[in-house]
Image (cartoon, rainbow, N blue to C red; front, side, top):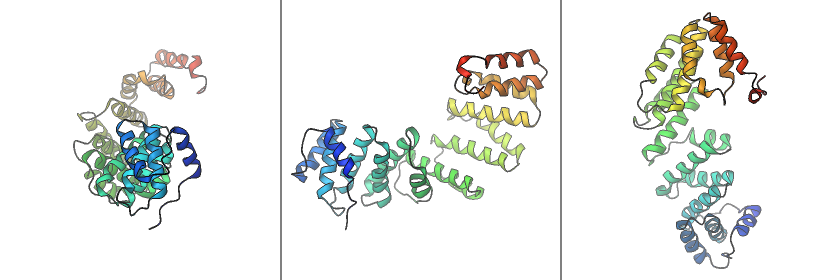
Length: 281
């Protein structure tokens, strides 16, 4: 089998990260990559793993393990895009099924925390692949992505099926419930959507961030339904988010204005005069 051609620029960068020349001895390079990986010497581990793969082929049973060490080293060095391609190769090729879960977990970290190519990683693989042998955490994340992709394509029934495959104890279970509730609202089922959002507030796995997003969604729905006092109360519960999301101050001002409290509405508008909100003005 042919192996992927190494990137010349990547080779130069990794060579600059470590002082050891691993290219002369592939066996030593692999063992060195393992040792440096355990020591969390990410640059040297990636350098050694890259040197091993430069002289090996995908038929070598150590190929994917070296790929994982290379990916992790690149990730730790801040080269998230390059790392994501190596994680993707290990996960999608499934040459070593024992590494698939770790590879998918690596993709999750990158998609959560770093810029990435969503077309390649999500729509090109994670959203459509039937990936087995995943742990509970990664399985929940993959099913959530697949359900979310189905929602965006208008395939509500399939999204419900995918969301239903998320383990109940997964952190992504309440996120799936939130996405489903928003989809109900988007399809004009306002009573069902509101009921789903209100029920979500009682979910013990709900994070503070998702609780706030749920309250904001309920506040905006209340405004649409002209329940202005309910909207104002809900906005007041999330007003601590205003420094990062100043648009909430404007929405809160409108809610208080329509509920008859013009003085308080003016107070929120005056708050937007602060220098930190110059961009939104």
